Amino acid sequence: MKIENIEQKNFFSFDKNYSALVKFIKPSKFKELELISNSANDFINVGSNLSYSPLAFSKKSISLALKSFNRIISFDLEKKEITVESGITLAELLNFTLKYNLWIPQLPGYPLITLGGAIATNAHGKSCAVNGTIRNSIKDIQIFHKSNGWLNLSKDENKDIFELTLGGLGLTGTIVNVTLNLQNVDNTDFITIKNKVSSMEECIQMIKKKSNKKDSFVYSWNMASNISNLGKGIVFENIISKKEVSKKIKIPEKKNKIKFKPYFSLWNKTSISIANKIFFETNFLLNNKKESFIDVIFPFYGKESYFHFFGKNGFFESQFLIPDGKIDEFLDEFKYLFKIHSPVITLLSFKNMSGEQKYLRFEDNMICMTLDYVNNKKNKLFMSEIDKLCIKYNILPSIIKDSRLDKKTFENCYKNLVEFKKEINKYDVNRYYKSETSERLGI
Image (tube, rainbow, N blue to C red; front, side):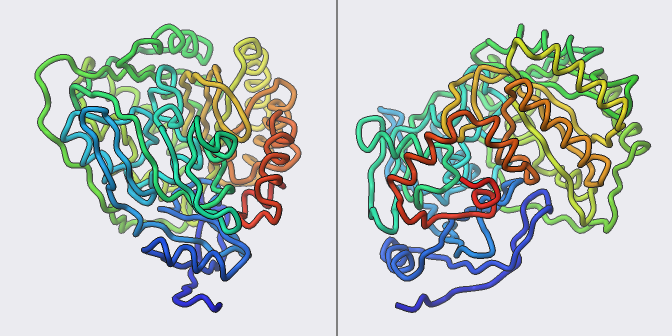
């Protein structure tokens, strides 16, 4: 059967490092999803296409655009459960649940990410030291698979596929419906406490100390414009306010339009140094400051210019989990390589994470380090040296954040990869669901 209403468009990864002319289609009903799936052999699912790495498209696959699947199906206030379709954005979800002082605390940092995308990437937020990743809020999932049909997944039903789907990059089929276990949130205002740190080592120790409080989100911002200020920065502690209850909020459900998009990168050693100094000094004009829900949970909303300032070539982001016993050795070698290569880094940040690493999930009881780089040859060389350290020290790099991650590094760092491939090949012999990322990494 011929598929109708196929469109073509150039898709870009969020970091702008990969693009492709992609065939995509926008089903709005379950029957359409079935018909489309029965009429072709290569698919992948796309929500808002905000992944740094190209997880939602490839040159060969048809992207199933699921934004029309954004309905609330059921809500049980007493049980604190909600069932929604996977195309719902975090903003749409929260604008409903916050009316009842309920939410899920594992929220990635941008409100227009879809819930299905967050599940496929096993997303986490600033509270990951205490609340872990989004899988901890999922009760059950309904998916559709070309050959296996409709499946209900949970810890009690099809548990093996449930585990493959959480953080499975959309490779087990199309996530259609999700039931979430909600939690109370008494306030949507936060009190932010700021602490100065002079080094990466001091920063990590402070984060470990502060990140076990139930209602606080702890993370850092650190300088990396030159070796003399490497690691100097601020540890932020966002604490849910215990004072007067804040007014109900409305999270924007449409993307901000950015008019100024420079062709060349505006980020260089000089501009980064100036921006770092201004940010560091102005942050201590007001300490113990009250901040809004949007500013804390979705820090880049309204500040998208930061990404556009990288120009048409985009940027690289690298995120990895460092085992506790390897932190000092890794940081020593990181600083040595920093001196040699002098990379152009716009963002350096740390936070603590909790959980259990399994399959493709970026999750464990480790320190999480994040770096943003200008896209140039020098930085690529530096990043390739860091890849070697990841292998050497059993460090886990993020698949979803790093679009230049190579197969060798991936296979050496993800110890459960063989088991994941064995299980998914048993479940889907023909491997119908593929993205550029899955093909590049040989998943």
